[in-house]
Image 1 (cartoon, rainbow, N blue to C red):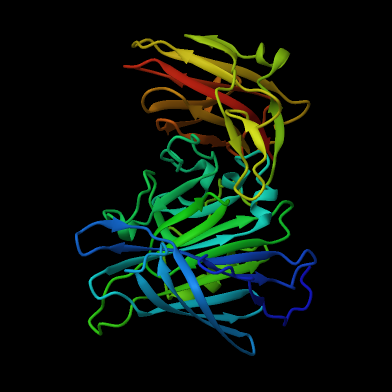
Image 2 (cartoon, rainbow, N blue to C red):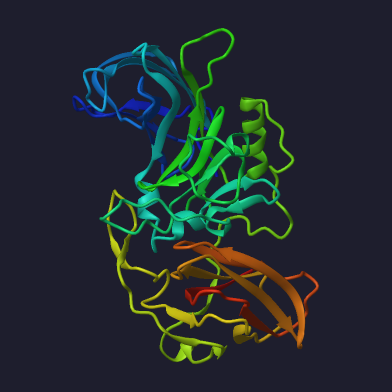
Length: 446
């Protein structure tokens, strides 16, 4: 239930240290827990006079602050990456309303021999890190809209390898940036994902569905989640006929978990209509943890029947952390409980299957079945997931799990299914290379 319905989002300049980036805290008073989000003017994308592309940080030496009712204006003076040859002057304007805050930026001064191509702003909250437990939850609770697929949780989209820091880690399982369809061929984005975002809107739903936090930027070239964990809708800048200063526009939404409301506000702010911005009937919405159907540990592991390869407990080869803010470590591969299992299948043309019977005490109470899959093979793997009821296939779906990626394999159960048991079958067909797939967290959703 909303409170203080006319209260705009609070805006506060975070205490700044010289030569670091600038952040503004946004706090909503409409919800009892007062959710908050930090906007960080993190990076820009530039092309140097010698053709080199850089993503320098917007280090700030001086901030001028001006306030009026529901508005905060900042003028940032500094040097990109603290380089004397890359000075800049940037104006930011924040305008607050009860359910959203608008952010406008304009680069007032910039080196004439450097081309600014994008603004990479970061939206971070301690809530994201606190609730990223286990460390795939940020992806399972964050959503975007994709061409040909409409609404999807980021965990369920076709993902590329997550961003990682060379030599120090193998990437966070929640991390994924997606190119937007508008900039599918752009050299700006380093995203390796296959699904294309149909809009610049990306959002996150809090535990228990009390509210959600969403972000969108005008002319975004990629959207998704980065290290914080944090939300990104990074804006490309294209010089127009008026030869205006480089600029960007972003909007933050802190709203009830009401997709109709969110999309109405978004379309008003960005004057955009999209055939992909809807939720299909078989989508898993809103956020729900579901019920655990299998732990892939101890005796539960023996309930799976394998035909082709081996299926055994997985011994972690590394660790995951839940984010830069908390840095709680988890064994790599484990997304639920204490352990997970690895399915190893040699190369060959013969079909390999893994299956388990799920029994219910009454008519099937679930609408979706899902499990986490992590590809530790040397190439991409296609996994067909089918559900049988009374020896008949009632649903079948093919998933591509790319090299070194993690993905939730989510299948919806037809509404007309009236059964007290389901047989879930995973099938891998022709294989040029050996397959190694880690599985965990078998869940049903009602």
